[in-house]
Length: 189
Ligand code: 5GP
Image (cartoon, rainbow, N blue to C red; front, top):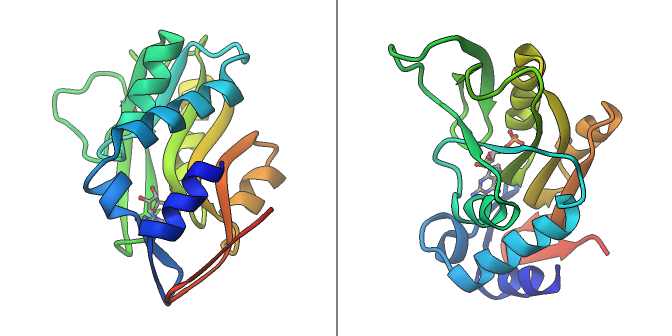
């Protein structure tokens, strides 16, 4: 996605250690025009699949998912990062956070992720795949069907994309970064 690549090169901040900050247009301040284009691109990639829900992890970047759900007229389900005492029929798993270096529980109610659901998972970054693998496990525990996983930015120098594809997951990444160091970002073709 050329628009996104150009924006990352213009406004992204890369750090040694493989971290990219996109706070000025995705994660902290959000550019609505770019978010709309991202939502439309996800629709192009997933819109012809027989999905009935979109899932994402709570507190992740919300706009593109809302846009995708809105365009496809589907509900969005948020996997929660804390276990609310009031949640009924809870399905849980553990996820390791790449950016925070902690392991935390994630959960979803099987009232909203059901056996006959076919879902697509959307997240901002794919790094080592911990979040995505956790969600895959949740979807399986709930008995639902995972049609695919979409990421705004895949860092292909990390293992997540390889792991997911080896497991047979349909992965769609809007841009793939093959090298990232301070002030240098290189994309896959
Ligand atoms: P993974 O679970 O694939 O190792 O990491 C994915 C999660 O970690 C994403 O949901 C994202 O929140 C965070 N993350 C991983 N790498 C980066 C990065 O380079 N920049 C930012 N802003 N978040 C990242």
